[in-house]
Amino acid sequence: MKAPFNEVISGFVSLLTGMGITLGQLFRPIVTVQYPHQTLTMPKRFRGHILLKKEPTTGKSTCVACDLCVKACPSDCILVEGEKKPGEKRKSVTLFELDYTKCSLCGACVEVCPVDALEYSRAYNLASTSKQEYKVMDLVKRLEDSKHP
Image (tube, rainbow, N blue to C red; front, side):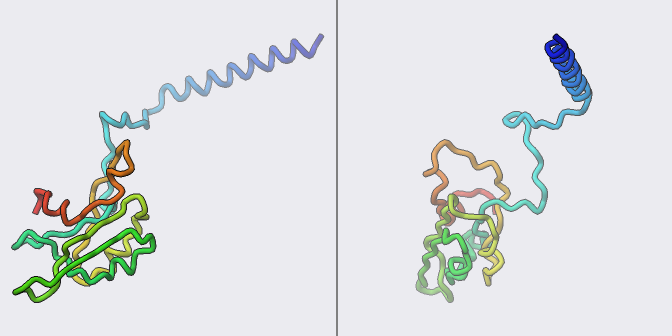
């Protein structure tokens, strides 16, 4: 006869403990970010996917298609093609593709670039319902389409 009574008392104590914890949390500051309506400020050192840098005078990429970034990439997610155009001193990039689904954001490509043609993007909320949308990003096309200098 004591066992059911002890279970009721134990359950009631457990209920009061849970309600005490809930009441204590009620008066603490909110730490949840209501995502679509609020966003976190990203730290200055945040690094997203890579981007090609623009040459200020011509507006074209400073990449010389040397393939060092391709060789340095441990994820094998970069494809670079370039050609030497008539009248130019060095090669210029014609294709720079990044498979964002394989990229580990390690930054090896940015560090190894001899002409400092790559930089980290500040984009952090690349979201899509389709994997194909970000599977392969053509960075040359994105550079041409971008409005920033």
